[in-house]
Image (cartoon, rainbow, N blue to C red; front, side, top):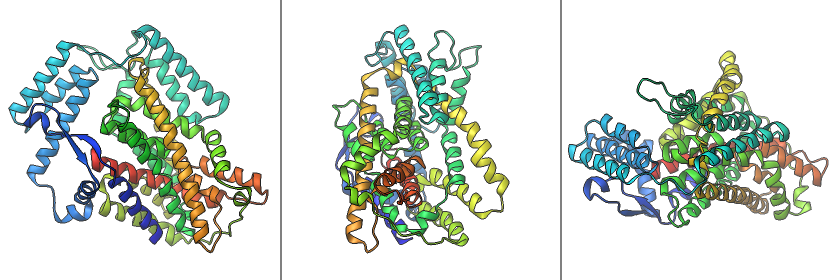
Length: 491
């Protein structure tokens, strides 16, 4: 258990101590009428995270002034995001709905939107509208082909692909917003109600928790460090996005970085809050790389390990008691609310699902969470994500950057887990097969199965599946912790 706590603190340190990155000052439009640059340094990162912990806030609740500042900053950021995406009507709606904000700021934001609308929206370089829609329909068909023919994440790639086709049908308005006298398209409501609110990813996490056995992690707690190491790709992708010549903002970079965790619901949850305009590309990249785990990881695993290392047989895991399995989700929840409340939505729902499973007193609820409910939500989530694959938002240079950064983050995360496992193997009395380090990415349980498969190739008597499940489920927690840290820093 101490090792798990260490993992959480290690993740906070890594993401809180980012090298200096640029960020927009949320108060600039109100105070200066222009954008200014500030920095998040190591010291400032730790200070901000410290003020966002539950321990600090229990004794220092938000004041009225802090709440007002947070509301004002959120309004400014939302209006700027809507305006930059060409959603001028949406930006004006946000201004009209604002309350408790000084009139001078509202007037200034209104002027900014009116000036931007008068100048006209210039979308990122992409194909002409008609040709772009046709191309995206082909992309949707390609996703459906991969789901059916290749079996790549079919539960999500199939509805995402179908949603992409629906949203790019000319004049159908299936994902369009409401107009006077006309309701919005049904995919608009799927996205607004389920994704924009964050409800769908949270329900998915509850179902995942109800299907997850944390026994292997509890039986060998040091494997939690492998789950933490695999999140290193998130940090690298964030820095890479910031280094791409101003193509992405700090919010975009944080949302892109989470792809490295190989956790689709977490990527969707974070992108919907930090960079909704890039949600489609981020979600497709996250689920595509999750689906390609059996193709991407084995070459990396063979390149970074010897045949002797891959053939290491680990000793059998100890038996984990029911009491341990019940206490674990409650302990994780308490640690989360004390140290990182911003991660509580994801961690909390994951642990709720797991507690329902392990307590065995609410079998009907557990069965619903891991079967009927998660299946229904998966259908609507996939269609909602597909609705963001409109040609004008997907076919541009940003998408190519996201796909490249996501792949890089995934590769680095896999390599980091393998290398840390090799280091731990040299420092530990009990032999650790380095292959289980690659399972630290959150693709559950596929990454663990790949570790087991590669291990069997080196030694037919080497069964690593249960050992690999330890870092695999730790990676799920680690990616949620990373998302919470990023929300606290740049949200």
